[in-house]
Amino acid sequence: MNGFKHKTPIQIRFKDIDALNHVNNANHITYFELARVKYFDDVVHEEVNWSEQGIILAKITVDYKAPVYFKDKLFVYTKCMHLGNKSFELTYSLVKEKDGKETELATGSSVQVCFDYKNQTTISIPPSWKKKVEVFEGL
Image (cartoon, rainbow, N blue to C red; front, side, top):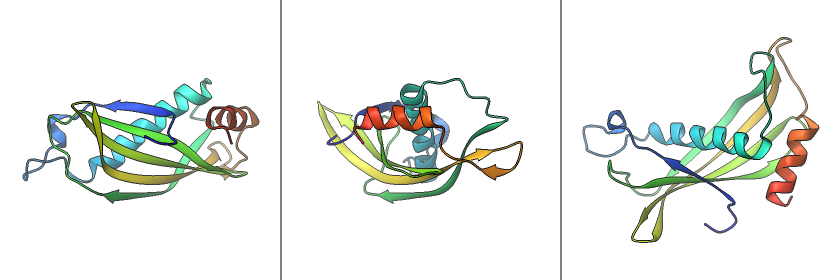
């Protein structure tokens, strides 16, 4: 996908399928979450004590374009669109791969806020995280 440098394979689980024989729309958010965690692990690549500080999800949007079926070979592309002082925005593209071609099935975005769980307050994005994302994305 154009402009995306990070790709996460997604395994569709049998429990993701609804009565209409396609992946229920609520699972798209879970797929984006899996991609977000993998992006963080691959790009930031730091040990984080999540009970002390980390990120919280402030907003998520999904635009559905086509149904997803059980046997589809799925991937989520992820990229950082914006880095602020305390928050950052990721954008997603859910695609299926078939015969060497990718078809976009959904897009989305999310805003994450860095958070201090001990003091229950927002915090600045750690400088090391910011630098690694800037380098990876070319921001």
